[in-house]
Length: 161
Length: 161
DNA sequence: ATTGATGCAAAAAATTTGCATCTGG
DNA sequence: CCAGATGCAAATTTTTTGCATCAAT
Image (tube, rainbow over all chains, first blue to last red; front, side):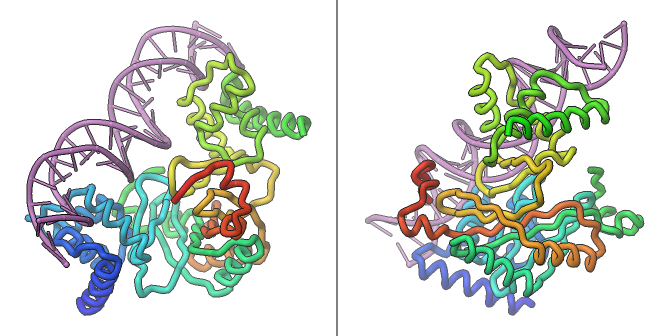
């Protein structure tokens, strides 16, 4: 897994070099953190993760935002509007595209991939004369775990509604 | 069409009465405007539309936001995160659900509906133990009109990026 | 009358920007 | 050295809230 991170980081580094962006300490830390988690994270979450890894870090939130922008443009991460609060990100480089199911009550996010759905999306874009760049399917619902009182995600976050 | 608006307004009014909300002048104007357009609108857009209809209106933006919230909860309108800028709304009452294709360059939004897609969504939610409440599929791309220089939407808005 | 709705201003939350300074190439 | 990156603070943008007042029921 550390190896995976190394590879992904290397890829980002290569991309940066390629497009003439500099490889700096803050960017290193940001990328390491972004690829070091499999959770969805906000800009602020990521900053906390960076600080957890290196309490001495001087990385500033503004730099996180700026770097996330670059990473998104380079298709290394993907932003996800969850409706409430800030945009969440996840690393996507080397991952197959997937869609999201979001529990409106506890905030839990499940991921799934469906080839049939993908072809339908392609077709729709074509039919309407669009060149598809990306797509985002989000299903909002209530997770049954929650109804059953067995939702650990809820326990962790403890939101109401 | 005026008749349609009347009916929709009546439905909203009935719903308000039902759940014990008052029917006020500001709400009347907001609902009329929301159902009087077939475009997607932001809270601010809507306020402009209200002022266009009645320059004397005293409706305040905060009230627009508050009312949009109520309307969304009542399933009369639906919010749409377009990633950049404010949330857009569209009235949905009496309309079949549809998905969106959004041009990242000119902002044009196309709507489509695909039964197959709908069943796949249903299935996915079920498979993951969710009770689906709503869903949002957005396909982002570049519209070919734009590439061909024939995109009127672009001419109207004239954005870059 | 009572309770909810509104206008207004001010706060909040999330993100972006200007600028002096630092630093990688 | 020099363009680009960063920290920091301040500005923006979008949405929400507190509160005195107003109006629907």
